[in-house]
Amino acid sequence: MKAFVNRSTHDFGAEAIKPARPETTWVRSSFVGALVLAIAFSVFVRVHLRNMPLERDEGEFAYVGQLMLQGIPPYKIACNMKLPGTYAAYAAMMAVFGETPSGIRIGLMLVNIAATVLVFFLAKYLYGWLAGTVAGMTYSFLSCRPAVLGFYAHATHFVILAALAGILLLLYAIDTKRTSIYFGGGLCFGLAFLMKQPGILFALFAVSYWLWQQWRRPFPWRNLAVQGGALFAGLALPFAVTCLMLFRAGVFPSFWFWTWSYAREYGVITTLPDAKTALRAFLPWVIRPFVIWEMVAIGLAAPFWSRFARAHAGFVTSFFLFSCLAVCPGFYFRPHYYILVLPAAALGAGIAVSAAQELLLEKRLGTWIAWFPVLYFAVAFVISARAEYRRYFRLDPVALVRRVQAGEAFPEAVAIGIYIKAHASDQDTIGLFGSEPEICFYSARHCASSYLYLYPLMEKQKFAHQMQDEMMQQVRDARPRFLVYVDDIHSWGWKAQVEENRGFVDSTWAYAQRNYEVVDQVAVAGDPDHLWGDHACLYVFRRKEKN
Image (cartoon, rainbow, N blue to C red; front, top):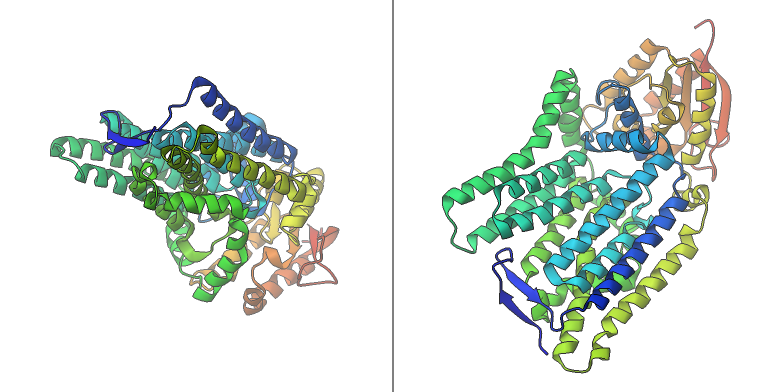
């Protein structure tokens, strides 16, 4: 029995895949069962870690989402360069599951399950049940790993969910030529961009692939214009509606400054040596377990040795390349950015296993021999999952933070937030000298300044000194009852940046000492580099009565 490729009226303008040996109901049920087990393992891990302290990006999303639930729009009293899609997603999750780290992580778990199912359907649509199962299992596992900070609810998870939905709708639209489906696909890509700016790369992939498909075959120009117009209309609609809503809320100038003017500066700060350092620091950990990523590489190269894999080589290759480009803006290469490439990588693993099986079936070496690639993947997956469990997943939430992000004050921020919530009135605000917005979320109190991070104030960009002056003026004007000073270098930036801005750093400490008194302090475990005192601490200051 030989694998073959043929044309199909139900395919999206390319070759339809017909496996050498159609899967029986029993085999398909086994595939689904394996995928469910992989998802169940991911659910077990995420439920176990659901109370892990929020890291600072999560703290930002949670705090702004909390403000949205109070009727306060983004960019009014809390600002950053991120687009508001993830803020809205957090607000929705917290409205359903509660304004707690656990509620946020349960929401992330459901997002991850949905993305896993979409990866399965994408690979199944292209290469069949086996490829879909392997791809889904691979994504479920890789997207949970500490190396990509997969247990944190970063914006990249939400980008992936929207982008995968858009890709599947686009393929279905090309297949059925239905204008409404083109619009729906464009809408999903627009939402992917709204979650985080690099999401636009998936929209560019979709448009490029759609144009390539139309160029390959005769097509009425009128229908092309209608369908293309629907795709672009759906793509533009989420951003247009967002701009209109923020304009009506009176925060559009602030939104535009942070998400365009400052974001443009932020995107060109990184130097080539910095980019190389980031790649050397994180990439070797991302591409583990090596046995899984070896299968990914084999699958991406499969069109060179497999007719079965060659049918959709253009789609797979371009999807992987655009996914890699989505990791690159700004050349920061932070661990959670690599989540954006995991669906394409998982698709490569699915292709590797299914194409290898098809090749063995073509060689007529026997049915049992043809199942060797499946067995190899199953063993590699189980061993890899067991290794990650023994190394990381069995730890309690705080211990895992200590191990993966040593020196970060995320667990200590919980205690600070609880203290302020217990001692502050509902009207009190918090002055925050540090980059730990999760403290505002834990305490359910507004930040006295719109600056949730100190990083922009430390960077070599033209707005830095203006931001320093504005932040200090906002704190002086607000006269917050409590002030939190994070004396941990991780919360300020690189050591060299702090030294270059020593005047501003000294002024923040002098302001706290002159106008406030220390009422609580929590030492940061591991004693990372710090600025004052004998060890790294989070200090809680209370305004002196005479002030």
